[in-house]
Amino acid sequence: MTKTLTISHPTGILKGRIQLPASKSEANRALIIAALAGGESKLHNLSEANDTQLLQKLLKSDSDSIDAEDAGTVMRFLTAYYAITGQQKTLTGTERMCQRPIKVLVEALQELGAGIEYLGKEGYPPLKISGFKGNGKKRLKVRSDISSQYISALIMVAPLLPEGLELELESKVSSRPYIEMTLALMKHFGVEAIFEGNTITVPHQKYQSATFSVESDWSAASYWYSMAALAKEADITLLGLREVSHQGDKAIVDIMRRLGVHTEFKPEGVRLTKKHSEKRLSYDFSNCPDLAQTIVALCAAIGVTLEMNGIESLRIKETDRIQALQIEVLGMGASLEERSPGIFQMKPTLMINRELNFRTYQDHRMAMAFAPIALLQPVQIQEPEVVRKSYPQFWEDLEKIGFEVMNNE
Image (cartoon, rainbow, N blue to C red; front, top):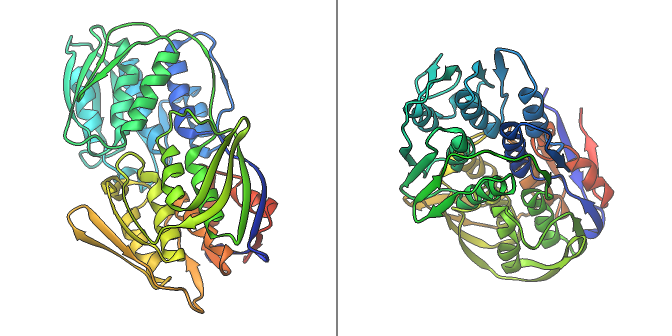
């Protein structure tokens, strides 16, 4: 029997302070770079997300067989890390992970001299990694419209290559802020790189051990922004967020300014309060695709017509997120359609006496994107344990701020 939670809020009034989880995007990059640096780097405020805890464990593992589970960054970052550091590993993951493409990264590493072969379907995990024989190649062309994680994986290991790396990005760059985050963290650990136009140049050099404190997660903050927009009254402080941030999902500040939430930056984080919402929104999610689910669910709930593009990468995430959204908003009387290639429109209708039971498709962001609708009426969330991937204490934090969360087992 599928586990479900019933979530409701008796007053619709939200006031309180929330300690957000640390950014797993920053944490996972810092872990790989610290491992490449050797020595004794000190990393503070590492994420409790399963992805980060898993990467910490695997980096310490002496096993020849490595299971990345359902963690995309773990699979992609470790593929490059093991290959360029000359390790022999078999790298696999969940059934869904073995359906997520990795060919772009593998072919790039093979061009550089890595020994990698597919143990199943070509272009997909599991992989057998059998060492590295540098061939002196330093220039690569790589597609950059599928996943920025391929690019980040390559540039993090680039300083170890005998000639460094000159990486030319072909086509539209997906999630550019995540590449810039990677470069900023590399610089923090002593590596200089140049990102000009569509080319990233990383000379051969050595990482230096360093101390680094991970920022709270702007992706996690997005769900609280959605709650503030849906609440009758809201005064929420999210702790640990910075006004100057490497995280692309800080774009939630601008998006939610148009959807009814005012942001005030304070020394301890951000304060969210309600304001007037616009009735239509058009947005390009190319730099922040992980925000799309939150915004679709919110707009469906508050009656905002949404037009969006830049969400192509959602097809290859934990689930096909576009398809999952199309199915779940139907239960709210809304529709999400691709009007022209890459251009989607979500048309809402008012929820009237509908019983809302949301499936999560083994995707943490589906659970957290639709949970805030409980401020309007009770909702059921199937397989709620999926939040462990990025925000393990999410349901407990909801209870801290007045939500009623009931286990239906």
